[in-house]
Length: 481
Image 1: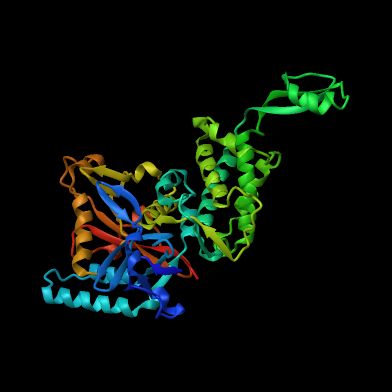
Image 2: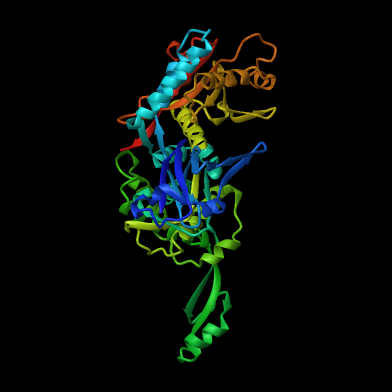
């Protein structure tokens, strides 16, 4: 039995000693008290000594309060109940953030702040229509479009292959399309660069000649016992593209092609990636798909073909996801998937990174200094060009409380005062201040109109008037309808 929730949400489960007096259809709102010690509080990561759990729980009287974080995915809550957190955001929070940051009055009283918070809380409770499902796959496609950004995606996903699988509907599956997009993007880079050539072994039953070494056992079975004395089974090395690595990639590519064709829920309109499949296909036209999966474990990787290592790793995850059965159907309405989690704040950071590169083609990743660290602080971006120096903080975790909103603003302003930051942009001996920018998500239901062009980020319309040289800008997130 599943519990379907949204990001940053609180859900109540009533604790009971038994289900005897509860109707079957109402049992989803109850939890057996004895199941409390079975709850798995999954820890996604640990950074700077702090654990980041995918969700937390708290017992209050006879209620279990289930609080979701900004991770999406599904996992076992207990041994027989699972939790499924969907990528749905209340974009009314972004509007409240914008309203609070545009207040020019600096001497808000405690009563005025409390009134603002109460009104904001009431609006959020009444704004159920403001929840929109974020198209994670579209975001990932943007992220994977740039190799400098794509290499940061290793920490985006957590999969527990050891846990029992969870049965869900096909359209609720985020894991498979996530892996397929990552794999195809890497394969596109490999095809663009050209397939790796290497020495690989070939076995052949040659007529009237010998090449390499004779395979005595097979020679006896295939030729001696059948009186084919002019034939010899030999094994020899060939230099070419039909190697183990390329055969494995071809095997996974064939599955991904079938998956994309049969699943249009994520791969339609702007997300149609059939063009990518058609781009890759000619490169593997003459490559066999016959490969022993176990041979992949002993490969050595050439640093010049660095995409191979990651592509093979993702390919193994895709095959493992479907029990190494390449012919397993991808059109079933119900599928089983291992527990997995996706880090949405990290995804948003990388999405912004990709948009910065896209909207500023004359700049490169060195101009954006992603995750610049100093004194235990980590800046999302430190933009440094000949004309602009900007400290940028992305805020996927938006607050609606007035004080917390301004705390976030002061945090990014504090980053700009660090000496190491000033040294990095060449202002160590200057009285000039570094402008600060907060980038937050907003909904793009029809078409995305937000741009992150460097020369327009600090326009007057983006100013936070209560602070000196602090700006904000909303960036459209793709939405699933």
